Image 1: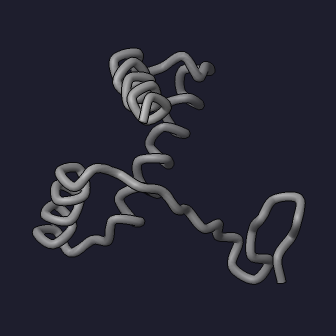
Image 2: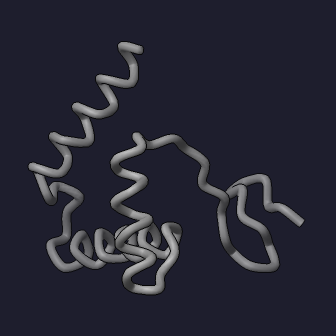
Image 3: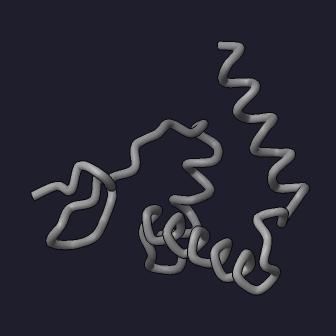
Length: 81
């Protein structure tokens, strides 16, 4: 059963993620995953956990400015398509 307020599956607490990334980025995630025995979704979840830990440690969401700048550039490029 799904909790409509959070879109989480009530029995697992997980959420679905769907999105498209370029083939080179996918290949990098796939290569890393195969070499280390981890899935792409595990890589994404672990990265999110690390961001959360960093935000908690610093007390702010104003972290990794270079990363944020690159993310904004990707978003802007996608909006132009």
